[in-house]
Amino acid sequence: MSRMYVPARAIEVEADGDGCPLAVRWRGAVYQGEGRNHWRVHTEWWENEVWRDYYLWESRDLLCEVYRDRLSGEWYLHRVYD
Figure (cartoon, rainbow, N blue to C red):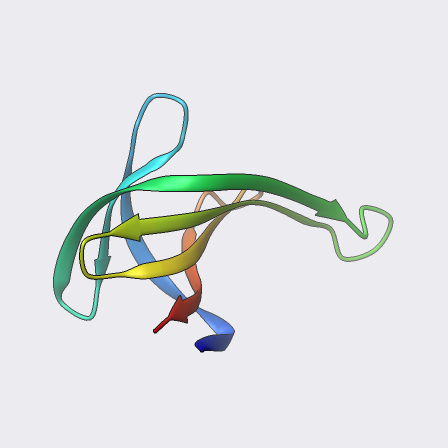
């Protein structure tokens, strides 16, 4: 099961030199982990552009989807898996 956050929740992320998240701060806790999968979404460039880098991100205690908005540089938590 999973819980999707709509709207996505803003989070703090520490990323490596390639932009892959290494640590996620959520609900007052810092989780150390790594991105397992990466995909990019770039759509609606003609109207309300969406340009994001998504990661399936895993730590010992947290499995989630996070994304970086490539237009603003902000990070968001999109989905948490049980």
